[in-house]
Image 1 (cartoon, rainbow, N blue to C red):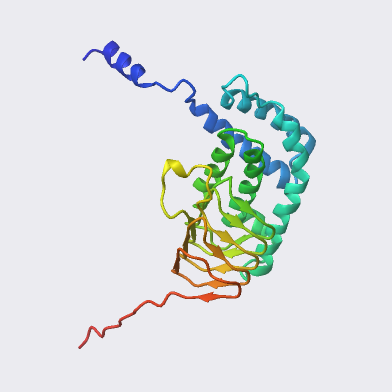
Image 2 (cartoon, one colour):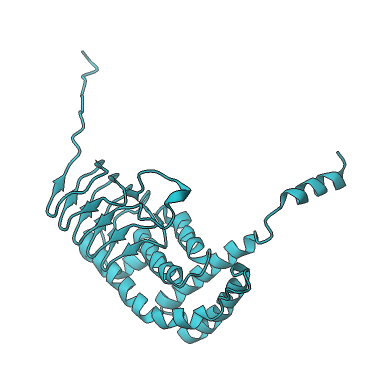
Length: 262
């Protein structure tokens, strides 16, 4: 096969006209700059907001390829929500600092906690999700996913003072509802019972009510599953049905210890 034939066959397989990887790169740069604008003490807010507006317009032109669905007007609406979003994200940082004895300062939370970063990017992406901006919210949370190992779908609904400890391996599905003062540990999955395209726009993921703590590697599945307020879900628990408020759920493994010298 000659070189021109190779090129022809490759180009024939590139069938998606709107698949441009610069969308992903620009979304990642936008996410990074937005985070710095909101949190970094030395980043000038006014200058960066103007720059973000330009970046957002470029992103909107790339992802809103349907001419009857323009995205450029979304920015002003989104920008007006940033002060309130920042207030909510700061509550998350305080919740982490207050609940984790390993946190020496709230600055340490902002600078080094992957759970905080994942939550912050989720909140920033969730508002764009609600404004029906295509693709960009998911790319924002995937940026956080790559950096932290925490996968929060931008469609999830999460209340105030949310805390993810250690963060790695946490999965929170699109239709999950998490209320206020909830704590998750590493490896927690809030997922669907099964995956099928016909379930789009249906509640597939659980509801976690106020003041619930879910320990490491617990799995909670199903759109009708509700974890009642003030409950504690122990590590490695597997739940596909609801539990009432004030429950203590534990997984009781069988552990065998054998003396190898006998």
